[in-house]
Amino acid sequence: MRRHPIIQMVVIGAIASAIGIALALWIDWFPADAADQAAPIDTLYDVLMIVSVPVFVLVTTVILYSVWAFRMRPGQENEDGPPIHGNTRLEVIWTAVPAIMLVSLCSYAYAVLTDIEEKHANALVVNVRAVQFAWSYSYPQEDGRPVSSTTLMLPKDRPVLFKIRSEDVIHDFWVPAFRVKIDAVPGITTEVRATPSKIGSYPVVCAELCGLGHSTMRSTARVVSPAAFDRWLADQTAPVAADDGGRELSQDDLIALGRETFAGAAACGACHTLADAGTTGTTGPDLDRVLPGMSEDEIRTDIVDPDAAVEAGYTAGVMPPNFGETLSAQQLDGLVAYLATVSK
Ligand code: CUA
Image (spheres, rainbow, N blue to C red):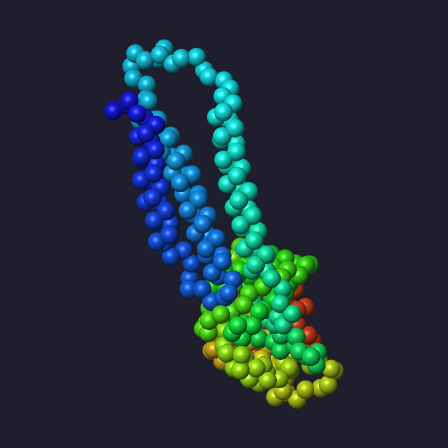
């Protein structure tokens, strides 16, 4: 039985590798794909599995087999021969084989990367804004008034260039169905490209631990037909929020602006429940519960200086202390006016 240990190891290793590869290819690692970038990435992933599973299995087999077959029995303590040093042929082989594998895989991965990051002249630019703990999107328009949205609307089959910025800490923009992902880093703009290929709704996830609300930092990418996208874009008049031209707003307009800011630019609903806005966030206090009885001044203080008085059971610093600064004066006034009407 111990006469052909190498043959035994090779046979066990080959069977285990075959099972491992079959298992690796059988497991559905990723959600349904929805972008042109997905297929080459999935193939790359499968190839990496096919190559790396036998390496892992081979090493494991040799170790486990040796521990079992060549274990020392009582009385064999002195049977070990002298240590062996230097085997040029072996060293050349175990240096050359991994080197060839690594260079081949890196070249292949580089080719895939070049392919999925190909630039397109007609790419749709979408500015992605990350803030604890919400995503928002804006679509630059020719008239200079960008269209803002908390849903990532995308036309099918048009290459998209995402430009990602963070307002506070490091986040990571990830659309699993597109396979692509990139960090959102404060102070720089990162870019990633994808060409949506299937109509449907797909989760947008934050893939970098960014604070207590990290797991709630999600939004939805909706891929629609190009015609539906154009209609949606046309329907979005430039948001009132962008219009801060010093003009006095009526109380009703101010409240409307506040309602829009709550849902849109400020994305309060990502963390707060408010029945009037139809939001169900649980990272921060339930506004339906805490708002009643609060004055406008108290509401304003809670927005611009959230740590001044923290609701029992919640932690200071979760709501960004500079939150008020991310809003225009008019947006802030609107938000206060809107929440004051809800509190009554
Ligand atoms: Cu943002 Cu995790």
